[in-house]
Length: 250
Picture (tube, rainbow, N blue to C red):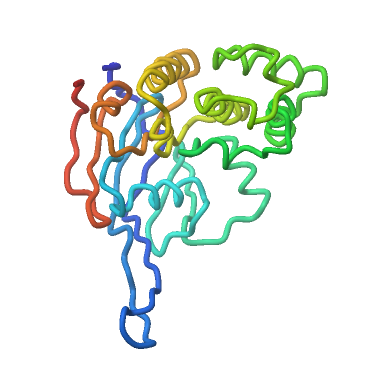
């Protein structure tokens, strides 16, 4: 387990609430379903925190609010001391700026990658959005990103369908690192991989964290995996945080 840092938190979440209007099972009336209920936690700068829980516990909804994919009903989010208003609509400009601070890696990389793009153009697009690099510098950075996630340079000319699941997830990680974020949110990012590939990607993530200083917010239902990558853990059930503490290596 990595040593827990004493630095100020890069991410502070306080009183996060997400309500949905849902139709009752009987009749035409609607009622409120609370998917996230008063969730609060801090992620230390350079640290790693896991949110674990069964399906429907609210862990992924919390993550999607943090990265701006959903709006909260209540609550506050601070990134490096800057207030992000999760209850308000985010402009395109703010979304791009926030993308430079926090990136998300999803469970299924095949769905998150544009199957029409080559891997090289996918990474180049991320660099065009999040950096001011010129074309030649971007080409070099694409090569560096592929090397960082331990992929052969020839993969730059391939399409997602030509890669294995593990390779596609490495590309997704490389794309998220193109912005040089402070926080990487990994939403069940290893769940679709076989055990041997999971071990390889876990080692890769540990190396990325050590070399870049990026903080991890790791969403999972698998405690043994959490124990290998995270310093601390919170457990969610029915939208609430029911337990928190240091991670245990299995």
